Length: 289
Image (cartoon, rainbow, N blue to C red):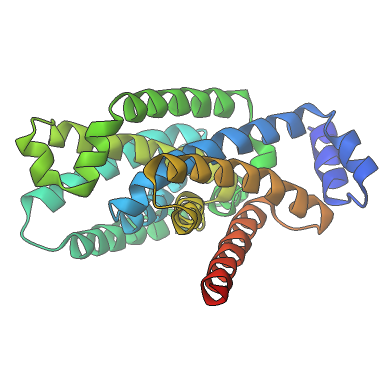
């Protein structure tokens, strides 16, 4: 534990490229980079469908409601990750079911369920006594703390998401464009919708370890939104989203070390700055034309 703490302190004191190269030799740093790349790819892949299907608020709700799972994990003295996975999965499926079975608008259902889950999460948090380090790290993210189990979960989820979405890409695109037409064409709409929500909910749970509950939605949305500005062709849009997601995650970690900033917010900040730069570049290019 002391060695790991010393390594983290050293990471926060990076002052030049030589120090950065030395840090890459530490196992915790190698795990963090591997996790950042895989989570960036996962976020870029799922984020494409999140933005096109207008599920940004859905992922936002799942991420914030995960506070209940985090608090339960701390109260029961369990690894918060093992509480986050089932909780976000059940929460995501229940919310989609309520949206399908009520006459209320989806944003109304999401607001109601999110408010209730947040209220429960805050109450449970108030019951936690003593040290709250596990809770704070999950709330605000700490990609340097991911372990081999987190990497394995991320890899399995990335492989599962890639197989599910890419093997049914044409049907997924049709479902995204027009669910009614997809239904007529024989696409199992409900199966694909619930399958995607399950993957999205699990991705939120996994990414929380890196960027925290408060910023996990941006991690999914910003790379895809940036890619959408750059291309309207779906294949290029998907590839660009994955590239932006993975590269910005690694760049955010480097920024974190160089400027002594928290890792999760640094990743999202880099993604935001990339979005602003791309947006400004496109506007200037349009004016020049």
